[in-house]
Length: 167
Image (cartoon, rainbow, N blue to C red):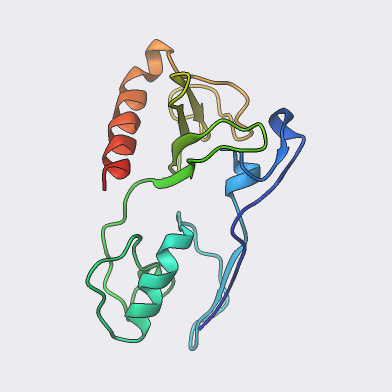
């Protein structure tokens, strides 16, 4: 298996940031290409994190690891050979140390939402990427945190984030 990826994206002025440490798609959406023997060329949709690489390699080697962060992405690219697994509905995104003028933040990226919390200020951001509850916002321009229509989603994502951070 050959894996091509990068560890971060980069914002070139989007959201008024010129950095690699922002919580927006420009910084967190990165190339992830896999060449897997016997598989045809196709694009597979799904959330995958860099933390999912080591579990995939362990699976490919038919080995066991006592504990690892992430989940193998092999069932996404080869569901016939690899039994489907229940994937976390969100990927953790974070900049725990801050730096370069960027405050530290923790967040989640789901198929439909980006959710971010800033521990130092208590601020939150919630973007409806696919228009699940309101206007579609793929460029993460309209923060819906605190809006009544999004209260249930915000609370659910906050609980999920808290659970992931406590692991």
